[in-house]
Length: 228
View (cartoon, rainbow, N blue to C red):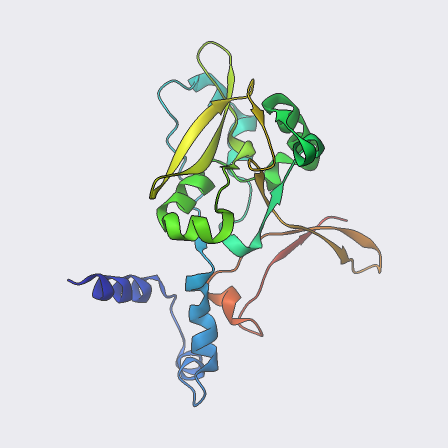
């Protein structure tokens, strides 16, 4: 099977069940809905199955990643989102110079680790290939601070994605290192939104820009998680 045929087959298999009315809307005279729906291909669509834990390296202290709090954090976050819905986050010291991994980790904790990307997210992004990575983060190494783990000897390590020639590789590094503005954290975007009581509150874009989300209107759209 050619690469094009494999691609079309994969797209068809990924489509959800559609009612006759929905099918007709997709293939209507203008076909604008179909074009809009398929636009997710250029956005970098990610799907995470939180029921399946990612595989950690053999050197990770198993007891550290098997605690209830770690697993709860690991399973937080949206199941599907687009790379365009992510934001880059820097410690203030990174903007003009460098910050240590420990400083960045504490800063991301204050912002909320549940809104950081983790190992499962980075592995899913890696599968999109180097072109998608360069389209969004060329020349950078992007970090998943949700998945800081402990080495057997006690050192903390954080995963990140980086270019290596024509490949995108996932690597780990000690928090004792320093990082500059080219080493941002990946986070789900934070917005101020108006609550039902007419008050401004923080909202987290859960980035559910899946097939339905790309269509907009009554069929779907971005999901917002509002904190009151």
